[in-house]
Image (spheres, rainbow, N blue to C red):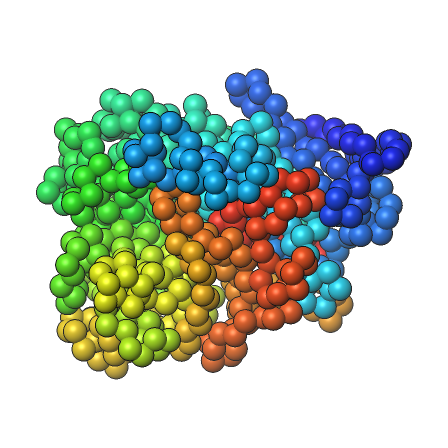
Length: 616
């Protein structure tokens, strides 16, 4: 890795370069009137290209002194929210627009995009001050722009950060995983990149889970780079239909971005072609398009959920009438050999009591996310459907054939916010799903369904985040009988005594085609000595309102902070304010960033991070 300096002019004079502690800096005065120190961290990828993350540290964080030591020290005693964001530009045209317009640029969309958003600008990690006691709480204190690739479509990172971890951040369209060192926040450095040629048997990286050795498992949702047979790290072979198709894979990635192993998500014998359509057709049908991933190292298990053949979602499904393009399967993998995850089970989620007019809205369609329980005595996991709008649970992920049941319908949470709702949770856009460390609560973000989406009488589904009390369910273990299998339970919650109950629901109106899609819990607490430690007592979560613009589901590009009470009640942190507007939530739709006048940005995922020096 090499660190170099950037150099920019102020309006009236050239600022002299200052060399200190091995890092070279320059500064510039942006039109946002923020002095910025520029630090570039670079690596040479296997293909010989130079990849970089360029820091744009707001000078106030460094007390006006241009030294690496002071910039690193600025993070001590602070907590940050790191947000992986993409540049908003004309390339966000949806698949349907491209199909209707001969040119790659839709003139209607072009007319509605600010001039500064038209050409692609760098994607970036935004570092936000997340210390409520700080005078710059909610302020963007650094933007780390990545190069040379643009239009990565920044997507997910891992679900939680632990001391010593790197951040693994995926580019959905660039088929690239970036590995960032955040140990000295607000300063960022680049530890490695994983490029398409490093994962020949998979494409479209989605989500990551870091292990105790700080390596990570990643889900690559799409098929091999080239159609045809592909050989994995264990010597097995699967036939795929190409980039963004099927089957996907599980990739083990090192802290330097290297591929430690590629392992198949598809079974060797194939799956039911009636349930798992592939376009183009495959000799052995598969639903293996892993999206969400979580791990129980103590149980030697990965749980991953299959969502969809990704290229058919971005371009609008090849066969929209074929609901099977949205997958209904969850997979477990045995990780006794960490570098050889082997497929242990494939479970088809059961249908529920709702009878939808659109088969793509039935309960099991589009299993996007999964989350594991955490305590040693619990072996269960949850999964949710984005198109179906429900939550499933199995009490034992180590079972040869895990038994999954529907245990909650989003309709119950919707009714708490909109009592006169007349349509169920079908196609309500469920996303982020996470248990708290005590296995007492389950957090869930729902994009919502805009009014009139189904017909002129449809009032829609609220854009919301809700919390379930799952304590009785997980305590019941294998003895649970909770199952949502009647219409009454769709609206009122499961009738069995151990079924999850709604602890809180909070509406986050969006006003766009999107809503809250992703989130993360704050797993740190500040100590009396000013340092931090990890905690199991979650008292706030951060959520972002953005999905993928090219699917036609965008968002208002805000990142909000929600406080969580000891009983799971949600409330908006009104002190986490946008530095330009003074309104709650940090707005990524802005003209100026520390890195320049690049306009609106799309925040997809976020993580709470404490610099290593302050983390006990």
